[in-house]
Image (cartoon, rainbow, N blue to C red; front, side):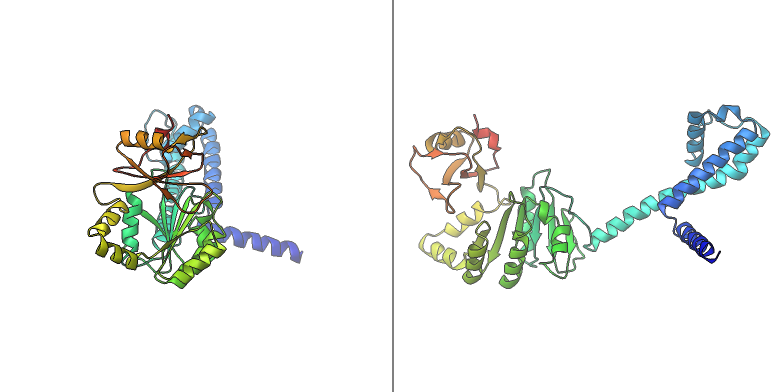
Length: 347
């Protein structure tokens, strides 16, 4: 006898807590019981027009939603009494509780995302920006959002706690930039692009190694270093990662020898400045085409073809022979006012 009593006590305890917390299971059960009792009471009251399932559900729902169209209503005194004393308090209370829980759930999701605790692991084709630099990251966000396609989302993973959030991005906060759980929550395993730019080369190195182990084979990973030694380590261990090395000294020397070179390079790398910008696209057509033919086709569309990077090479070739064939998988680098669709060269 003691064991059944203990099980019964645990059952009542769970039911009490479920009612106190208004779990969805208990709420649906209470609504179902209330609706069933209402149907029985109306049957006893002789409300034949409200006994049909579709008519009853329609009347019960409009009553609970406080819409009250009036096309269906109790016709007997007993039916009206049941409605006033039983249906109105129970159905309306259930409806307001459902609305409150839905709004509360939406509010919880909003607060979690504002706090950097959101989960974006189900997103596909997103761009994940790992790390935060107070001066440079906002500029990178501007650049990325200026050329963001409608099906892409920008997710920022950082250790910093951000309060003034940019509405164009999704924000994930983590104590570690190498945490598999945090990288997964930011959507790295499903991302199309991953960019690592932190405020120190050591953090960039560790975050790049962690992200490279999770990204899908089709994703493109880019990282930025100030120091050549760190960049060399990534080249050795993750050759598929594109490494950007700070070009400050080289750019200063080039501007000294060729005045205005720094302005030209800056304009080519920014989407925010009006004028020409450097773009690239992968040649996906099955039929190879000559460099001269593609250059002429691009020129007709207001673009200038600068270089080709073979699928087998890691560096682009500038001014190749005009009869060089461009094969499927080769990447074309061109300058234009706006990005061209890959299909624009397929004809």
